[in-house]
Image (cartoon, rainbow, N blue to C red; front, side, top):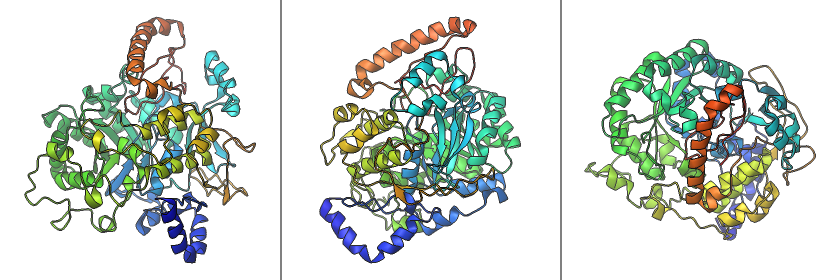
Length: 568
């Protein structure tokens, strides 16, 4: 949206300005995310009345499967993404119509020692890692962190908005042992709406701990984790996110999924790649489609698909061909968060019929060809449902300021929004990577603070600071006098604590090929030395490159809990 369009929109909406401001005071609706700015207005929420009513449903009164059906059927989900799926991105996704959001994967031993606190200034529930649980080396680094002077009290591992994320938040746990998974779940279950087990991350630091995709080759252990969580979590749903187990044959994946469902899984998400597939390779839609079709013929739990859904045409075609119950977006959401915005006709009926412009009567167009099509029209890459990508980045930064995100984490996510290096090669030419202000990755990497990022992106609005928080599952209440106030800078004196820092190196974006080789060598060296360090209880400074999996925390060499992240 350009400035003239913004002014027209403001003029057209002047008559209902008062009602819009009333909505901003309503903590139960995504409309409360942003106040109208002087130049570029925030996008109107695409959440329907049904979405808002869903916030008021008491899920605890339902069975676990009824709750799962409520959450996952006809769902649009923000995927768990390392460094990205923290509270700024999650709340932004909700404002654009995401019906569910996942936390980034948090390893079982990292969340267990955290302290649950009520952040009265931000109106959030925080899980803070006690400072004394870090190694001395990490403590020294935290004390020297000028961007986060409050880290002396410990970093924030998880921050939740109990208003905006009510009935919308799934916690993803990285685990390889049922007892540790249950301990982690019991820590956070009062503040989330379900537990998801990561069974897809193929990275060495995850697999070597028996987590992630290591579970795909150990169905007994995977089912034990699901069954243990299901037996002990009452009405809270338990789900799993997996990958395809075979590039062509659907049977291994079908057998694995059915075993998980038999063990008690209330929903399953299937990513359309196998272990070993690079992120820029095309998702295996053919195998994925056949797997989901067969599951929908025999299973009653929600089945969610994930992988290369870059347009609403992709989403609608996948739903039509598979009958899947929902979709999960990762990199496509980073490319343009407004992809979650459904057309009015989609809110009424998500099925595709012969009158839809993306419908093919022959229904025989090969999926491989469909994936290579530059979709046009209402559901294509230039859909009128989509918002300007510059404004999407500006929105995200406003959310970062609102929730006191660490500047390095914000910078990482913005860089991911700006580049297509991990997009499938057959999609890159369809993705417009230009920005209105001519911002580049190099200019973003020069930013040293959140204020720098705000200036580079010319952010003209902020988000209301809401601190009158309703009762949580634990019967806690936060009250304050900041409701409706806006915060213009990122380092005010009233900040309770900034978000946790996820370390990475700017060369990850500026010189990715060279950096990947260096990190690959570093991973090999770290893994080779870890066996020796384990016997001495030394600190394991594993470094790896995240390639889109949901890895988050890693374990210390002595097996103790930490909230460290792989440096990237």
